[in-house]
Amino acid sequence: ADVNSRIVEPGDKGTAPLFGDGAGAVLMEAGNSDQGLLCCQLGADGAGGGMRDRPVGGTSRPLTPELVASGQHYLKMDGRNVFKWAIQAVTETIELVLQKAQVDVADVKLFVLHQANIRIIQSTAKKLGVDMDRVVVTVQDHGNTSAASIPLALSVGVANGQIQPGDLIVSEAIGGGLAWGAVVLRW
Image (cartoon, rainbow, N blue to C red):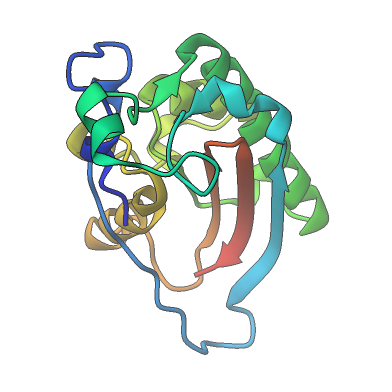
């Protein structure tokens, strides 16, 4: 769950409209022997942390009522550089998990990407050579719900009939810090 409205300055027109509040979870259970996780890849690079940062909070500079009142607790983001980084990280990680799983992009029924920004989603799909009808898109309804965006997108994909048992799915997420990950799974 993420309550982004608490950490995004409402008047910041470059950041505030991109984030929404949300919660989600995925419950996995045993299925057929051909269902499940085929490959997973995670990565992190703290050198990019300044591109998306909260200057206060945590143990080094705990959040106090004074810091909240001063607005110092709000998220700061270099949107242009995060955008460039995200497309590269997402595309490369998806290509890596597909290669490790020995799966071709054409074999994937549906891509459930982190719902950070429609332009990131579209650019990633284009770089992968994937038509947008093979990508679940919910960002227009929920905004970037951070950690909740994948569970919410999966829920929408199932509810819309886009995801059926046995479908090959690729999912990826990005996060502040900077961190990323992708999975290939048989639903």
